[in-house]
Image (cartoon, rainbow, N blue to C red; front, side):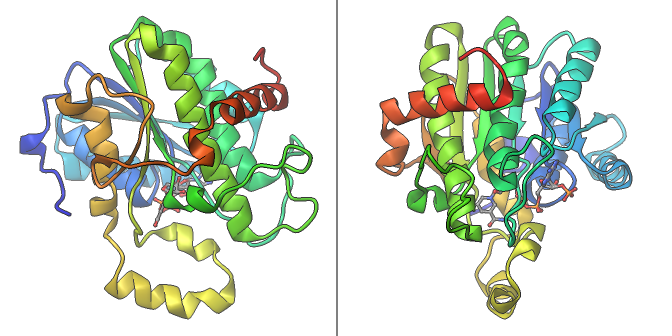
Length: 293
Ligand SMILES: NC(=O)c1ccc[n+]([C@@H]2O[C@H](COP(=O)([O-])OP(=O)(O)OC[C@H]3O[C@@H](n4cnc5c(N)ncnc54)[C@H](OP(=O)(O)O)[C@@H]3O)[C@@H](O)[C@H]2O)c1
C-alpha cells in the first residue's frame, strides 16, 4: 500500500475538517496530509501538552500556510464531548468532514465517570455522541462526510445488551471488538438516516499499524507485538491512507454506509450488516448518552 501523496489529493482549501485522536498514530499522520492539502483542520487531543506538540508538528510538516488549530476532549467523559461540540460549533460556521478516530484498548475493565465500560464509552459512544451533536452542522454544510475508524477486530465482536460493559467475563479483545462492531453498526444506521441529506458516512480498517495503541496490550503480548511492529505492520502514514481516501476522494463522494479496507469496500461481519441490531444499538446508545433516539 502506498501513501497517497498530496499531489493526488483534491485541494481542500474550502474544507473544514475535525479529526479526533490527532495526537498520535494514524490520526496524526492523516492530519499532516489533510493540512498539507490546505484544509482548515481542528485536531482533537485530550492532553494539552501532547495536543500542542502535535499541532506544532503538523504545522511544521505541512508547511507555513497550513490552517490548523486544536480543541481538547477526553472521550471517556460525556461532559467533555458535549463541551467539545459546543466549542467547535461556537467557533466554526461549517463542518465538511468529521473523522472519528480516537480509540484505545484497556487491559483492565474500568468504568468512566458516566459509569460505562471505558472501551465501549471511548471507542463507540465517543463517536456516537460527538457525531450526533455535530450532525446539524454537517447537514448544513452538505455535501459532507463522516469517516469512522473501525477495525477488522469488529469481525469477532458481539453485542449483549444485558451486559454491554462485560460485568461478566471482561477481556481486552472482547471489549475492543464490541466497540469496533459498534462503529460498523453505527455507520450503517447513520448512513440510512442521512441518505437524503448528502452526508456520507463510512467505516474503515486502517490495517495493522505500528502505533501507540499497542502499548495498552497485556505484558505477555509485548514481545510478539514488537516483532510484528518491526516486520509486518504498516507505518502510521500508511495506516492513515484509507482515512484520507474516504475523507477526500471524489471516487467515494456519493458512497455511504460501507466498510472499507485498503481503499476498497469489504463485506463487514454478518452482525455488522444486521439492521435490527444497528437500530437496537442506536437506541441503547441514545439512552446511555441521554439523547432522544
Ligand atoms: N493501530 C492499528 O493497528 C489499528 C488497527 C485497527 C484500528 N485501529 C484504530 O485506529 C484508531 C487510531 O488508533 P492508532 O492506532 O493511531 O493508536 P494511537 O497512536 O494510540 O492513537 C490513538 C489516539 O486516540 C486518542 N485517545 C485515546 N483515548 C482517548 C480518550 N479517552 N480521549 C481522547 N482521545 C483519546 C489518543 O490520545 P493520546 O495521545 O492522548 O493517548 C491518540 O490520539 C483507533 O480508533 C483504533 O481503534 C488501529
